[in-house]
Amino acid sequence: AQTVTQSQPEMSVQEAETVTLSCTYDTSESDYYLFWYKQPPSRQMILVIRQEAYKQQNATENRFSVNFQKAAKSFSLKISDSQLGDAAMYFCASLGAYGGATNKLIFGTGTLLAVQP
Amino acid sequence: GAGVSQTPSNKVTEKGKYVELRCDPISGHTALYWYRQSLGQGPEFLIYFQGTGAADDSGLPNDRFFAVRPEGSVSTLKIQRTERGDSAVYLCASSNDQGSPDTQYFGPGTRLTVL
Image 1 (cartoon, rainbow over the protein chains, first blue to last red):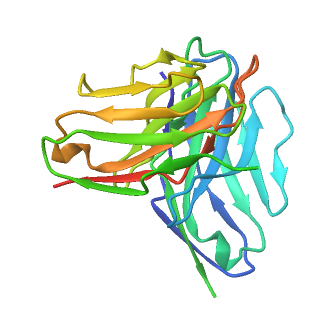
Image 2: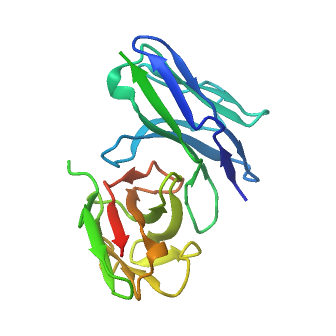
């Protein structure tokens, strides 16, 4: 069974500063994908970044980057130059690459990020 | 192009009533997913369609919940004899799984409130 743990219910960052959101996971899959999704008050889940576990290089998307530590089963999200629009709930999720009949995402409980002007 | 759409945006119903929630996936996406998100929690998987068939319905909580996707595009989640515990946001997602899993794109969700 796959599990995803986010141990920070809430985080706060000053505008233009850098913040790191933590995520750990557990999986029996030999290959898998990891995701960070952003959910603003509008409820729409927006993909922030995706990492394939077989790739050693950390994924980056503009101001967003991850620190993927496969042995430690850790997948943290770094947001650089934080902007007011980054304020949202952030969910870490895992998905087995060869999960048989299902491709379901397993989500953590989320981290609520506040950005202070 | 258009993203995943869900209707209605909000639904208020009384305990014991029947409700239908609709999801219109991204055009051409073969895979469709339903998730349920309770207050303060992450989404939880309900059911996954590949084309017209339910490939995995292991997340449906009981037999009051049922979903269909008759033509491999639009899907409807149906809840019979609603209970107050069914109150949640129901999210739909679609992806273009061709071989390995692809990124799932979510709709805005339907907030269901059972009084």
